[in-house]
Length: 118
Length: 110
Image 1 (cartoon, each protein chain N blue to C red):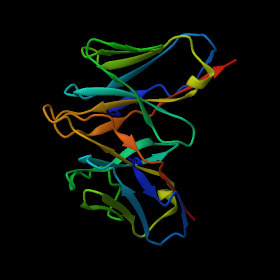
Image 2: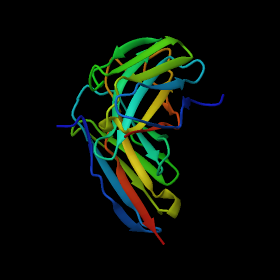
Image 3: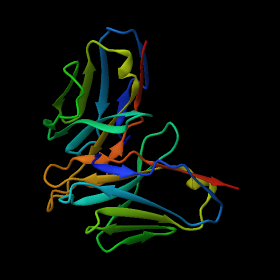
């Protein structure tokens, strides 16, 4: 398996534009996480899905952010309109829960999307 | 108060030294715990899980203290290649929500 794949790796956009980040989780994983990382705030969980269903989106900073997971192999994080303070590295991670306990096994991260909003 | 707290460091140690990091968590119902490692401009990767009885993996030892709600990571015989940021991760009960600490930066010097 190629691991978690994110695209694009880098994105530079102007304030007010729509930005869409994409993620392909590891095949067979039933959990998908979107994180944002900045120097000031570290790694923040934005939203996570279980079996394509959003479970907790309390980390999504505001209505400008939305995430979808239309199927088990694809998720998007959209920012509309983007603002300079959205500049960060956005990571997608996927994991699999143990069948008998429901606890997560290791979470694998994609290489991240470095977003710069100017 | 943050849910998972770590000393950001940096910890500057010479090669061969022993160094320890602590991490505290606020949710007493947390079920599972991990240490991740993140190199500069890279994604986090699992270093080791932390088990109730403590566990060791080569030069690395992880311990859990549920009563005081902290976990620790001990690195013996530090190598230059151990230089990285170490992230404490806590999985809350029901829901499998992985929460990361802010990370502790380690720099091992020759």
